[in-house]
Structure formats: C-alpha cells, structure tokens
Image (cartoon, rainbow, N blue to C red; front, side, top):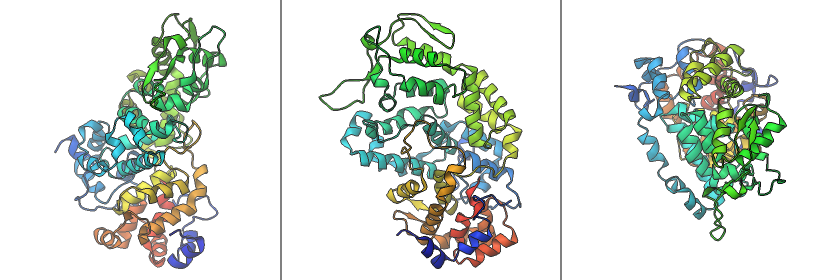
Length: 489
C-alpha cells in the first residue's frame, strides 16, 4: 500500500519530527583468521554501536566502501583492524561469498549463457537484473566490488529499453562490469567496446565504411572519448571523434537474423575503414583491421586526460562533490603509474587526507539509501519487485537511465525523492513491502536501547534533541531512516 503524505503524518506522527530534525526547507541539509575472514561475515558478530558524537574513522570507512554498516560489522572490523579490512576488500577474490551466491541461485538468467537470455521476456530480464543487483549489494561480503559495480555501471551506462539491450544488458553486467570492476581500466573499456549491449545502445553495430566516401557512425566514438575515457574537457576535437569512429568501424554483432538474436559479436573487415588514422596526434597505420580498436584504446586509456577524468569521478563518488584538487592529483598519479589498475587507484584514494577528513559529506543516491536501510536494520528481502518499484519511484531503478552519462553523482537531482524515501522508511517499518521484512522487535533486542539503535543508524551518537524527537515519534525506526543524518554518508 502506498503511503500518502496525509497518512504518513497521521499514522506515524513524524511530520513535525522531521521538520524539527531539519529536513524541510533546507534541501535535507546534514545535522552537524586471514584476509578472507575480514569479509564482513557479521551475521553472528556482537553489536557495537558508534560511541562518538561525530562520525569516527571506522564508520566512515564502512559508509564509503560498503553499502552501509550492518549490526555486527563494527565489532568484526574492530577485532582485526581497518587496514586488514581494506586489504580484504581491495582483493575481493580472496573473499568467500558463498552465502550471497546461494541467495542468487533462484535468479535463472544468471546461470544461462547470453544467447539463452532470449528465452526470457524483457520484463523478466529487467526484473532479474534489478533483483540480482539489490541482493548482491545487501548480502555480498565483497562490498567494495559491489560499490564499484554501481560506479562502472553508471560510467558505462546502457539503458535496458533499447532494442536488443532488453536482453543483452544483463549479459553486459555479467561479462563486462562484474569481471572487470576491480581489474584494469583498459580491460574494462575493451570489454565494453565489444559488448553486444553497447554495440546496440550507441549504434556501434551500424558503424561501417564500405566506400571511401562513407562517413562512419560517430555515436559510440563520441561517448567513448567524452564519457568513458578523456572527459568532455580532455583535449580532443571533432577530428579525433571522426578518426576514432573510423578505427571502430566494422565491429558489429553476428547476423543470425533467422534466429532473431544478436548475442554474437563479430568484426567484419569489409565494413572497416582500412586507411591510416590519426587520433590525438598519434598515427595509426593503414591496414590494421581489428587491431585498430586495440591501438585506439591504448592511446585513450594511457592519456593523461583519462587519468584526471577518472580520478575526478572517483573522488566525487568516494570523497566529496566537488572533488578536492589535491586528491584528484594523487589518484590520477596512481592511475598513470599503475596502468589503470583499479585496486591500486582505490588504495591511493583511500590514503588521501581528503578521504579521511570528508565524513558525512555525500548525499545517498536512492539505491544506496535503500540498500543501507536494509543492511542497517538486518532486513530479510527477496530483492523483488516491491523494492525495484521503490527505486523506480525514487528515480534510480537499475539500468533505466535513458542517456549515456548514467545516473548523476551530485546531490541536487535526488533531493526531490525525499517523500518516496519517507514512504520507503514507513513501508519497511510496517512490513508493507512484499518480500521484504524488518523484525523490529529483534532489531530492538539486538541494539539494546533506543540511543544505541539511533547511534547505529546515524553513524554517531544522537544529540539529546534528536533522541527525544525519534522517541516521541511513535515509530523510531521509520523516523531514524527518514532523518537527515541517515541521508548522508
């Protein structure tokens, strides 16, 4: 059942509480045994809430490199140390994630090769994509990998409603984003460039030069330079876009028209511009064929503008928006010296003073808000349609953003989703979301007292006034989840 503003106020008594907490008229301003064992296996760990009036280092790390702390996470990390926890998250393959895999076992397309995805309806594929993303974000012990999956999904955005993307977008998640999210940037871009979904979404499959006078389709080449590598201010020109498009000509999907499928990627030499090209001042000799793609990506991925552009985006996502210039410089240098090795880049980012200092400065986008609420309260969920619809109402349903730039990182576009966040908080606390349930009594038992419960949800001890307002609301869980302190991380 959808909660209206009136029923929200009447049934929960929180309208005045949220106002008193500073939510209205302020744009939701903030109130001031080995590595694998550190994978956040916190299901049975004792509860240990924050004890400081400001966000401490441990909570800060949990807020930024996971989708939010669970009830036992602090005690797990306190026992072994933040550095060991970070080392584990930066090496996700060292982490046993069997429990999460079990939860995903019922999502049938996950076990099928891409060509078999056509056996499912587009609605089933979109549901499977959203459900798998939610369940992994909630339950995976490889939390930093999941955070980076969300980051790269926006960076290489593909909407799931265009043509064959209705089926192949899921394959892009499994074959491009997830395997390379914590690998090398060059490998990620190479996989994306030849992804069936990307070839369809940005018209790369229609990029052909059969005759010398033919003009290649520039759609993918333009986004490759502007959004995926150099950035809009990266120093390229229209000439570079055209030359990059010529390098990319001839890549398409297999023409199995009698099967109605486009899951097979192919390079067709007769559709490729075999003449010499020049990109960013670098000459690519004639006759390169399929290797022109490799030469193009070598030029783009090693360019200083790409290092700066990726560093800026990462710093915006993990530190603050706008990103601090000193942190950008340090992260860009790590990108250049490591050849775009993503864990090395993240390690440099996490070591910056700016990361340490910028606590509670990033507004949660809807996906993080929903997942952090589920994790914080120990909710059980099937990740099903009720949650996907909640994300849709808040504006961030997986793979439904229509343009190539992906869901925005800045806070302003998300302020308008506040009412739907309150709706979600009330729905969670009252068990109104089919397939998802918070055991409020058990949550209260584990946390022990209201002040410890609120400290856990806020990431710091609440002020006396905050605590009084939450207590007097009649629904402490909903009010705490809807409060400004829970909106920022």
